[in-house]
Amino acid sequence: MDTIESAFTPRETVSELDRYIVGQGKAKRAVAIALRNRWRRRQLSDDLREEVSPKNIIMIGPTGVGKTEIARRLARLGQAPFIKVEASKFTEVGYVGRDVESMIRDLTDIAVNMVRKEETERLQAEAARHAEDRLIELLLEQANGHSQHSDANHYFAVGPAGPSSTTTISHAERESMRTQLRNGQLDDVTVTVQSAVQSATPTFEIMGGAGMEDMMSSLKDAFGNLQGMMSGKSETRDVDMKVPDALRMLTEEESEKMVQMDRVVELALEKVQTSGIIFVDEIDKIALGSGRGASGGTGPDISRGGVQRDLLPIVEGCMVNTKHGPVRTDHMLFIAAGAFHETKVSDLIPELQGRFPIRVELSALSEDDFYRILSEPQNSLVRQYEALLATEGVTLRFHEDGLRALARMAYQANTQLENIGARRLHTVLENLLEEISFNAPELGGKTIEVNAGLVTDRLAHVLDDEDLSRYIL
Image (cartoon, rainbow, N blue to C red; front, top):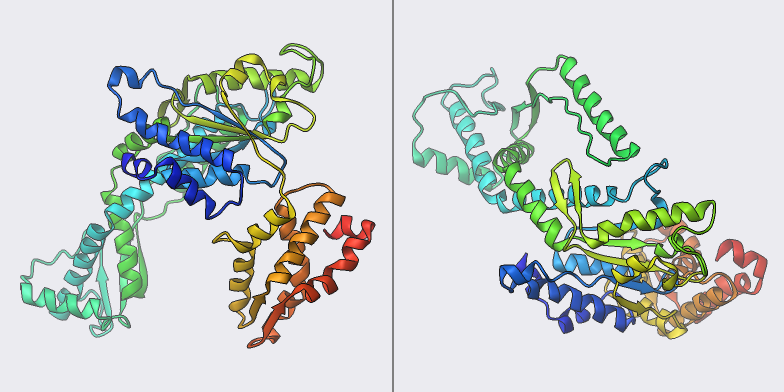
């Protein structure tokens, strides 16, 4: 973990974010410092390290300006467990719905899957060698007349534990068969692979504070496992497949056997506690509104204040029970975001405000920003549409005046209608290219020039008709 996070200075982190997100320099600088501070904290002595807590961030800005994308890209840069939750989806303890602790349980599951994948990739080469050896042993045994099938020229069999024959096979024979296997000379051979099937043991866990949704999920898993045990399935199954497919299947089996889940869980718990990032969106939806305190108001205000009070200990740092073990939240990084159109950050309860000391405001997108979003990022919508239609043999060629016209249309639509930020580009481009996308299979080999004239012809009448634009754009 240290290697990844220390690989990026704040300046380099901002530079990486610039490849995918246009503008919003203040927000990028804030998250870049937060990422670097994690590495800095781990360089401290043990006694001081525990005293340094992350500086959580609140991003304030309209929808579609890059708040979520900044947090998601930051997590990818740091290879950190990341989850996005919506504050409005949680309910106060005692009400039907998800409790705030479920975000920690979900993040822990993500961390376990992430570490398991990393361990599998780390052991991939060794697992492939073991699988290759199992297959070679069988092929050589079959060649020496020990086949379990009558057709010795086309069928071989291998079990989960490898061949049972004690026939001595020379090193030269093994290497000769290995060469044939790697050169693809055995790709057309059919193999009957005995695949091991693990018998599931039904388990049911109820964590302290678990919500109804988590309990129902655990019940479903338990009954599913019990049904599998009572179905009377054998512990092995015979599958006929070509040698390349058999090799892939055996490699997966070897990987599963080699991955030590105790080690995976241990690493995952460490990773989630020291590197976890939780993005809490729509935090403005649980603010109480001007003039209301944490206990003021009626109706939904009670639940909003309750969610804030439940969220407070999570952000402050507490212990949450998960099915993988207890998880502390003291050093997780929380990034909250909201438009705050009808409320202000000061409408949150004071204790929660204090746990988000860094506040950055993201600006609304201008017409020039829309043009840059279309032309600069590596994953821009323009490049995506070009690649999609290229699969049909259609070449899309975007001219600069066409991109300018698209940016202008998107900006005007946001001005006249609801401001949905960069997401407006999706609707504008989809409407522009709808007919081309529909007819693409019949347009193979053609080049479509997307210039200002085409954009105006396809979209100008829609934007001019306010009622029509509300439905289409």
